[in-house]
View 1 (tube, rainbow, N blue to C red):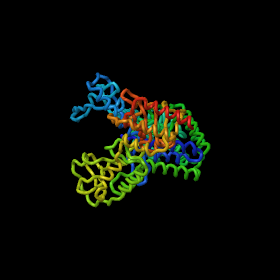
View 2 (cartoon, rainbow, N blue to C red):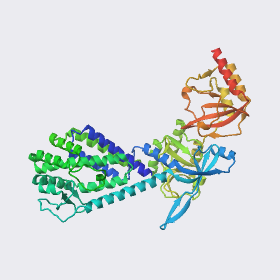
View 3 (tube, one colour):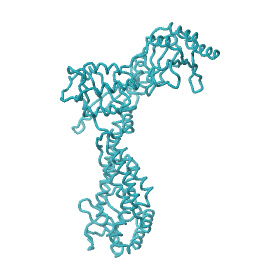
View 4 (cartoon, rainbow, N blue to C red):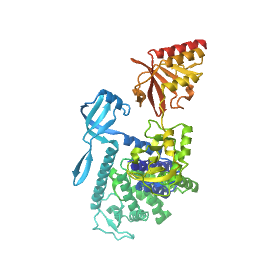
Length: 601
């Protein structure tokens, strides 16, 4: 799925650029150059792979889209609740969002001897409990099935359309014409055309074959199509539509490239016929306009056509009259922009197969995540220490493989850029008698990249560990603080933030926390929507610095068993952890401290 997403986005980028160039430089580029611009787009639409290049821009958008597709699920047909204690549901809500699939079944059947997996049911978590659904399908698989189905339908339509068209082209009336290609007269044909991939022929309506001038122009036009290899480009255009049927920009590109091909063919025909034929050639085009306008299925036919609708013919005649020539500056700008976009579209960051490549990815990463921990490391000082540690190894000179069970015994790490994974997972652990850096190269295969001094693996685990704040930590910080920032509920842009500096009030705040007890809940709320209503907020940092430290604020929530104190953690979503329980009414005490500080100035 990630390949399809990158393929579609890269091709769309090139199509949009060509559309912009056609619009801005339409009077400064000849039709032949405009037609040639589409060759780069066609190449990208036919080649799905990207070339790994160091320092290539990171495909953030495609990675984010792929993460979303891989994360989402489709389910339907509710069958009933699952018998599970509510306490277990509440614990699961700390790891899942309401509406997430917590488990599913997999079955396998044989269709024409081919094993096919399907999902007969799944369990979905809600605040009220677990619900079972009879239909389940991951979004990634659903989209892949839809893609294959759409490509199959359109491919079948393309084959049927061309076979139907080929049956109308009878070869029983060959015309003895001055043309290198065989020419046939076909009654009922609406326009002169070139058709055939391996042995193309020219086909003409009887009216054109009987008019000497129209015949000369039509043969020049269709033979120019042959010299431009348009019979091959038409087939490739149809193949591209099958591969990218879901992308509307590809359909626009197919239509416009077909138009530009006709304009380029008009220019080539005039060069072959001579300038004296420019006006008569235009009259021939006008005479063909009434025969038949373009039909939607024409885009699926691997043939060229000289006739078009009135609007298309009018544009072609206008171009014939204006005689546009390519301006060198415009050509340079178009070529430079297209080459730059093509390079960006065809390259990707290299995969990690060496220690030096790993270090380059390390320098580009924003965060490092130990998957045994609830949060990644994002403090700059801690990140610099981790980068220095990971850069201190020596490149491994062997192909040593770790023990089969090392993945379960060692912490797994990710280098992360914002919210997407930049590299494969890696391990730094002592699982072969020495500290080594291992990079995943497959489900059960690993590559040793570097060897480190003893103790480095343990140090990395310490640096990436998330230490939850305790009541003792808060009490110690309050004893050392000379300024505390408080806010009463509800917090909004108008809620005043009080600065508590009076020594007596600070002492009362310390005394309040001295009455607290460690919380036995130790809960983590993965989203603010799950958090109980809070009544006050406290921080040792000024508001403009909130969000710079992981434990920068405390929330107070009045409940039946006392006032719960929760730490506010910031990483994408806001997470919370119960730290302590203060006597009931602690939030009101904080509100009183805010009021008394305001009266003392």
